Image (cartoon, rainbow, N blue to C red):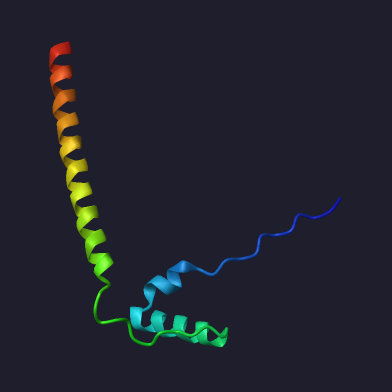
Amino acid sequence: MAKAKKPASRPSTKLASSLPPAVVEQAAQEWLEAHGIAASKTPSAQPDPSCHALTEVLTQTIQRIHQELNSLHERIARLEKNND
C-alpha cells in the first residue's frame, strides 16, 4: 500500500506579520529583483485621480447600504412589534 504524501509545508504568515513593514517591503523588492522583475523603490507621491474618484463612489455606496440596513432594521422591528 502506498504511503500518502505529506502536504508541502507552507511558510508561516505569522513571521511576515510580526516584521516591521519596511523590512517586509525591502524583502519583497529584493525577491522581485532576484527573479528579474523590476521593483519600484519609491511609491508615487501623487495618488492616481481615478483612485480618488473610486474612493468617493465607494464611500457613497457604503453610505447608501448603511441607510438601507437601518431602514430594514426599522421595518423588522415594526413587524416584530406587530406580531407580539
